[in-house]
Amino acid sequence: VAMWGLRGAPAQVSSLPSEFRATLSPQQVQLYDLLTRLERNDNDQDARLDLAILYYDLRDQTGNIEFASKAIKHYERYLKANPEDVNARADYATVLYYAGQTDPAIQQASLVLQQEPDHVKANYNLGVFYLKGRGDLLSALAQFRKVEALTRVGDQVTLGINTEAKRFIK
Image (tube, rainbow, N blue to C red):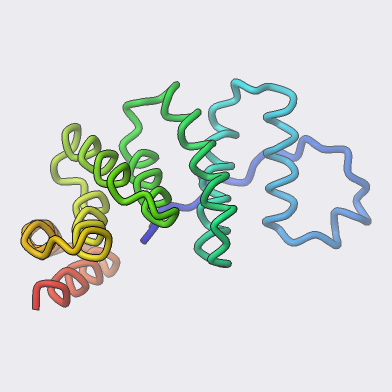
């Protein structure tokens, strides 16, 4: 469901021996570097958001709910300091849903839409939350119709979302 990636490679802050570092995957290196940055400065909001995104991506890739729990923890801390970040809040809503927390996910997606009513990802995911999380077909249909209207024109990703929304409408 996520379409956001890390905002850039984090600065290498560790003193890991290069021979050992070379044996790690890029995600393992990022994880180590971000955790090290936060250990040095717990208020590094860029590192906190990047870490939340990395855990979110790891949950997507592996299906491991532990990564969702870790992402939730870091999104909550980040959003406490940056409540206006609608993209982070939309991702937070999604990871809550992945963790089986449908009602909080709906609440967070609704907060995004209060700030930005045409936020495509939040509208789409809210439809998914209603359909698959609650079984509320009418609410889901309303969300997917809105997404279909918002994505009639655009780039390949936007048109792909439009196709998915139409699939749910039928």
